[in-house]
Length: 380
Ligand SMILES: *[C@@H]1O[C@H](CO)[C@@H](O)[C@H](O)[C@H]1NC(C)=O
Image (tube, rainbow, N blue to C red; front, side):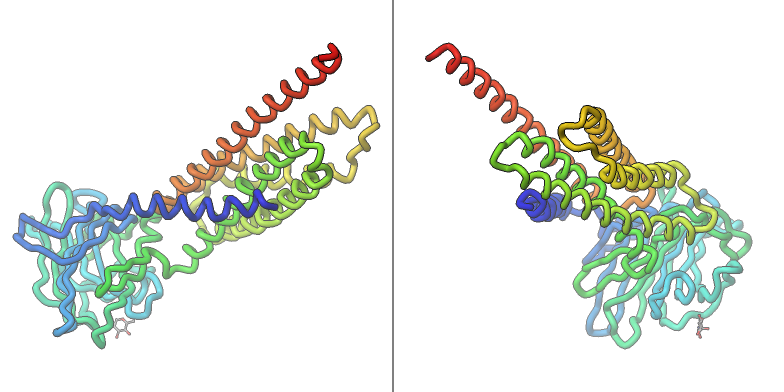
């Protein structure tokens, strides 16, 4: 139990350390091409975009600059505010592209449906000083927005697309980034919670956290306990209960995470991550079999117990290895902020370090014991 409790604060500390290291942001506030300077900026992780702004509390306006790379040089980029905070539909947006006549265009679009491409239309915000520029393969949109009711906490949505026909931007792709490029931000403080507004994102986060904690933190801790505590005579049968506790709770948490994965998979039509799905199903099946194998465990004296142990250990290690592989696949798919992947790697290194340390200790203990029994035998 002490071991299980020990890792939660350790993990939090590691996340905080990585967070601090990342506080140095690489976003850009100054745009020499147009001679503009803003007071705040943020790197929007999805679609590697740069968002810079200055908030004017007196007038309740923001001057903003949004930079992203269109999917092709004939593509478009867009930034907008959704006052209802419900994803893409309802967004009052600015879309910029290079018009077929060669000039840069930026216009307002009221996004009312996902089904058809939007046409230029009036939006419910007062937007002034709109401008767009193309430089180094990137498009930057500039504009001054008058916020509604001077509300500085906004829900913004951004996007890039591949084609434009006349004034109508073509449909964007449905990659992970294109579906997650939205979130809330407080323009007076600059505190952003990128893509926190979508229930799918919430489900994805939960899926990630449950699987990481269940399969690849609790289960390995349980393995470490079984392997190293068992050797300590005074820890018998405590190690066994701790092992069972870690494995059963790890399995329960992991299965909950597995179920959110199924839900995510069935609700994302058209996008199938076959490998991640198959490994996930395999881990679940093997782990379930491992639970049932307990029911047929021969007792200690039984000559088959040795084989059962070998089976139990190899299946256990297989589960841990497959889960770790699958979690890395999951990181590649969902692309959460880098700090999470780093924190996870930190936890793995921590667990690995503890295991190596205990392995060395147990070897030392083994030799000390061996030499003391042999000295006793020699009458020293
Ligand atoms: C924009 O669309 C919304 C529906 O999504 C509608 O309520 C609103 O009146 C429209 N705004 C303008 C200026 O047409």
